[in-house]
Length: 479
Picture 1 (cartoon, helix red, strand yellow):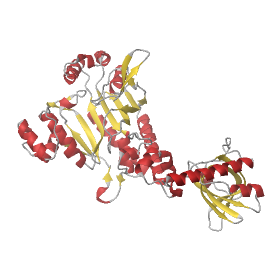
Picture 2: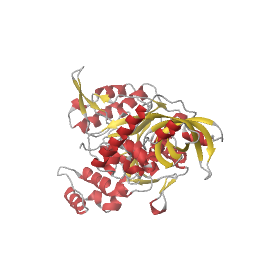
Picture 3: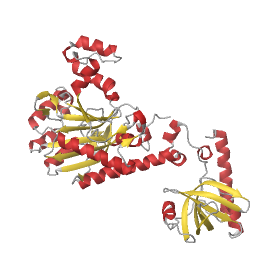
Picture 4: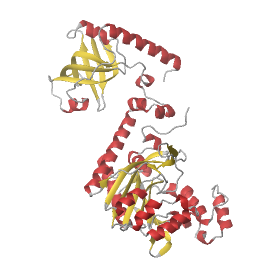
């Protein structure tokens, strides 16, 4: 992009052009403009000789003496326009020369095809709709600085076509998810984002203060406990596409504000969720990509069911040795440290093991893998496996080295649920969500439940490398 001095000069020139246009009767920031259709619709329904009205942003202007060609862009695509001094009012033709790339204009004219075969609009009238006082990035060669792209996403969307296409795909993915669930009888609901207790996950919340009630509140870290209340209330298939907030780090796969799909099906279980997520991913992939293979070569992802399944313990033993779970804690810590892990001094064998899984194993699981039979102590809201109470009846679906969708056979025993939450709280009973526990005592049906990281799913389906590339306005360090 131009340096600051050049940018100021460009702005001054554009400002002078704006004043000159105003003197000629062109309002720099005009009124609404009735269009015959969006540019993509004009192209699709092209009929030579048809009179049309179109509007958009000027992104190229090619003056050739008594003729001008320019490209008009709106949210749907581009269309070439043509102006001739022979059949356009002389003042209007001359004034067009005061326009700059990035300006928004409206045009009236007839559709025709140029000698080069380009569908175009032969302009008979034009009007200024909005003057751009700052130039677009690098004179339309693209916005290259990564941080600037995130901070000024609006320019990134204009300058980098592939970025706009990725966000169009994200919108289509979310639409496909909704369609899929609604077709299966799921009802979309909304639950509070401002809560008195952070529940449904183990994460540090953002804390705020509710002035009217004189009470500290938190932004939700998960909607789980409210959605389960709805199961108690008689909703048997519910989902929420929700914003969650976790006061934690920023990295390639984490943003403190993120989008989750969370859903519950009464009288279902883990098998219900396994079938559901495989079908949902196939549905979204077919809608957006036209197939279930993403990418090419050795790095290609094959999203064709059935997905591989692997037990948590088996993956750990494969990486750390068959004797791992028999090792005393000092020996396990020593082996983990030798593998490059940085361990907190108070971690027990379970936490050391989970660090091994998260840092050394999960990122190696590229093709879709259901990691099953996770230690029950890590997941207090799930039922245990019938054949082993030390394991939870859960899976974590991992794709491209990141968790996409955890799912449970849900725990609906209020007595056992209280015991587990008390253990997790370390005896601090004031941290328990008593309203949730009371709801469970009214009878929650057996159920399957699942969360799907929408941002990460979009990364998988679009091939994006970082979560910031699929969030329109990601969180950044303040300048």
